[in-house]
Image 1 (cartoon, rainbow, N blue to C red):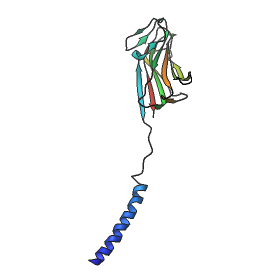
Image 2: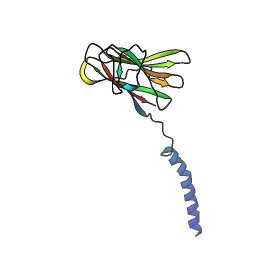
Image 3: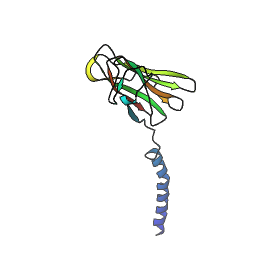
Image 4: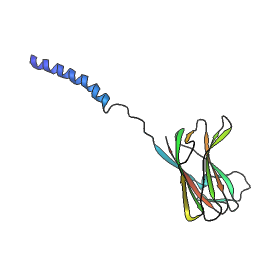
Length: 169
């Protein structure tokens, strides 16, 4: 009996000493945080005219203006800091007029704004036309100091269905 006890205690001590080493080197170590990707769709119904002089129709599905006009939509993200990855415009443009959308960041503390990207539709019979870009600079938005919004310009007999913003955080 005494010999079993002598072998059991050193074996137990060896297991206890080795356990933290294998846990630290393997599965119990903290993992690196992974970027999460999300997207928001800004529907036509979210855009507001920049003046009451525009002749437009916003039925919620699409926004159109026979005479052209500019519209804005505020952006809201589920976390305070995001990195914009892609902007996609869904529009109809079958003529010389176009639909353009710009992503801006207003900075109220310093009374300025920054243009991150601007893109336009191209004449096409495809309805809806899908135009996207990843050429966004700067990509980061921090809503603690910035108020992001979209600026939409309709050139005339065109329609916009919405704008999709893909981001990571």
